[in-house]
Image (cartoon, rainbow, N blue to C red; front, side, top):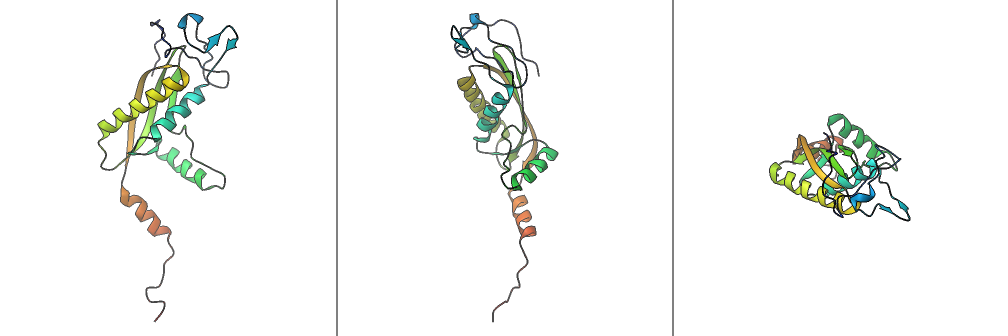
Length: 172
């Protein structure tokens, strides 16, 4: 995935940058017209922040079961079971951020029965809206890679396997 670096007409929603905490540290030029640079100072946004915003926005869409490939999901499931552990909001999310634009790749697991093309449109709409509104970056693309389909019976079978066996007639 590449983020175009050519000049585009500036608007309030197309200014942006990344930060020193991760990724590229490209600042929006004053000509960009965005609110990240001012006479009082400069604001930078880390790639990790854009990843979290995109991940949270994608998770809000009904029909998304999970994120990441098989190994990443297995590791995430283990992490959630550790006391104090929680699911990573950036698992299955990668971003590339330029001076004023961002491109996002999502690796997702879809619930069985959901129309994938409609789900992809809803995810793109939600992710683009959230990232552009919160960061001021113009999102040029959201690529969605569907790697698995979650079947409702898969959770039921796993729960049955973990449940202790009970005698059928304990009390007579």
